[in-house]
Length: 248
Ligand code: SAM
Image (cartoon, rainbow, N blue to C red):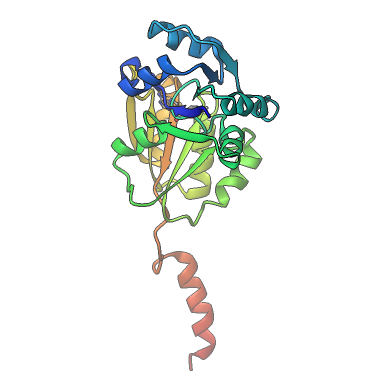
């Protein structure tokens, strides 16, 4: 049977494509891509021309079966997404799940992944982190989603688009508090790569004042809540309420 290779591709700098990825892309029978035109350019850059199959969120359920048939018939394939590691806020889960269930060999080729690249240089704790992908687009739903993370103690990592970056950070300042430590990685591996670090309130100010800071692609990182908050207002109030009736 053929092999399904999961191939990470660059998130902005073509030099980040691994030698192994280039080799496997040249060897497979076909490439399953999120956007065949986009990935076609990558193959062209490598001097390759390969049959391609579109596999995106809207057709993955329909297409996966046919792709598995081809793998079981002996063809090998590479799954790529537009940028970074497939399945990470990108298509591929249904295909990999089915491949595993049916005993097709799945081989990952490691490479760029925006969340890991961002964390590796942001200066926030990395011993424990939780990846939450994209938040809801609408503010009400977004705040509700953020409220569920309010007491999370691990570093939180989100993906965000330029249209919503300022609104999302505003909601974070609201839900997590203006003083919560945050970092934003923008345009990783590209010409205008930048890191912003500060409190939620400070980052909101930067985003509001600097239009350039709102352009491009973003990874938003939020430091976890402190584990215990003995000095927190809430605890003091609660403690007083408990103790007052006991006082002589
Ligand atoms: N599979 C990709 C990965 O491995 O990172 C993520 C795909 S997701 C559809 C696209 C999002 O990833 C963007 O909206 C942005 O939040 C983040 N992203 C991708 N490339 C980036 C970059 N060069 N700089 C900052 N964020 C990036």
